[in-house]
Length: 285
Image 1 (spheres, rainbow, N blue to C red):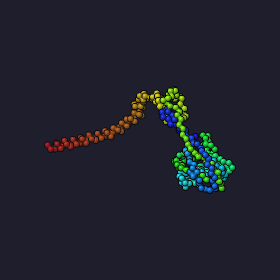
Image 2 (image 1 turned 45 degrees about the vertical axis):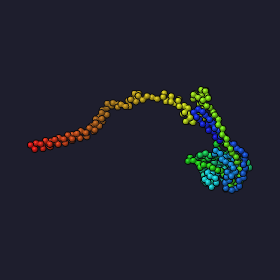
Image 3 (image 1 turned 60 degrees about the horizontal axis):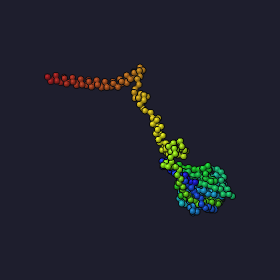
Image 4 (image 1 turned 90 degrees about the vertical axis):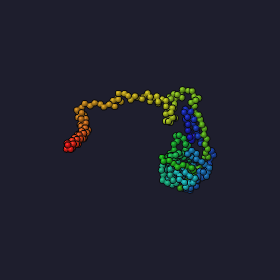
């Protein structure tokens, strides 16, 4: 099974299971040559970011995830059993520098060994044997900015090694299974959240299902702000300390002195003005 997706509409749950079906085997012999053999030339397609194959080789098995239709397009190169079958690496170009590596001898000169390669938007994983939930692979590399779109794949053996390969033709089928329907289910589990297995739900789905309960909890825990502590925050507390009174008096004086001086200055100017006016009137007489 490649993919399992659950679509929830309210409490109507549908699970879509997508399976990969392996058809006939395609065998191929690769020479000691650093030229990629494209899977598209063998009528093999990559479905949902997964490829399975078996290979019998002594060392230096190369597999490429290609962003175009030729080996000259940008690619990610996976080397299995390089350096005398002692190390496997992932590269961001053909014969480029490794960005991830794992030590170990995985190839066998006399027997086929099964491998799988999976990839998504940011991660490439290489594993041996059959891919399962417990078999998470032995070599992984991620690029947080995102991988190139993979349109083709290729393989070759080199550095004194040849290889025998077995690939599989691939098809997919999708099956939809209705889990439960709110309109037809009259059991108490619909309204009793204790029956819900939260481990299979996302955070958003839990918020939708528990909306009423959360609102009830919020209303129960909400506190009215019109209590004594809140009201006291709006009033100034008295402070009868002598130092506080002195500081307050000094502050008042600092504020009032400029105002008083300004008023006195205006009064003196007005007095002088009136005195001059009176002197002029007396002089005219």
